[in-house]
Length: 363
Image (tube, rainbow, N blue to C red; front, side):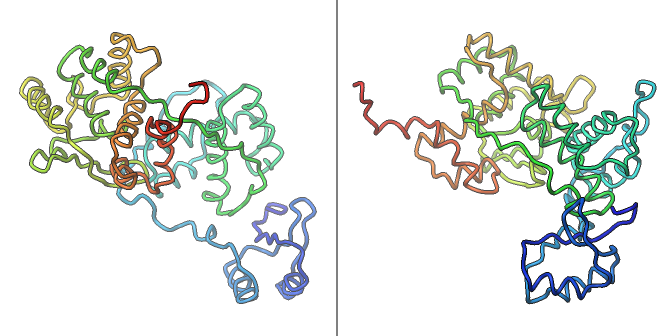
């Protein structure tokens, strides 16, 4: 935005050819603030830019086309909850157009909640400034505040994504804040526990429902949200598979169903008689994520496991134990629903067979 007018910014490395081509654009100007050339953002000018540089340089233009549908299989969002919630007096709410764009883009409910939460943190940090007056320095001061409070890199990156969504998607200004520095990506190893500890946790569950929950988290490598979304029709006992729909990245996949888990699931079904979802709460709705976390943690504490065990630790353990037993990493990738084996390769760093052939110099 230059003087409240939307512009097409053109950033490039010094090059005489590019500079000469820019001179041929309609009324090009130079911005000292953004360190780039710019022309008015119109459909005609956008076409002129492409035609001018076509065949001469590579143009990164894909973010200009932000109206393509994404996540078309996500359930319809109930953003009315965000509109009607009760907040403290003087609290600055997320703009209506922000909610509308999230709704039209059909983002997952969890993503909507994250984006709205972080964007409201940002705009309330600069409560006395209008949105159109905020610039890169205001974003940096907000992020600096988060860093000083010692929030994680992942937390800060989520905040950046929520802010960029407003300027780049809602206001249709691609790469508006491309110079904002992101924290370096953390590279942490997955937490894994032994098979014996897994069995001990299963034996320490309070009832057959809790037992089945732990068995499926580990024996099928499910994420907590995937477990909660399972319906009775997703259990394929003939093929010994579980169908996982609309998982992370809006992907469907199938994963393993343990014979041991199937035996206990039949006992569980007879006792609890769920109607739609495999695991339901007292009101017949989906079982809650908080309850699943409590089931796992309580059972792990009773089993006297020394580390904090979460549903994702069980998923990590599933993948690592498969790798240690000789399962091909590409098969594990499919079972976990990873888009690339690069993501799955993290388990090679904690699998015991990675180190078995190495003789310890002390020994």
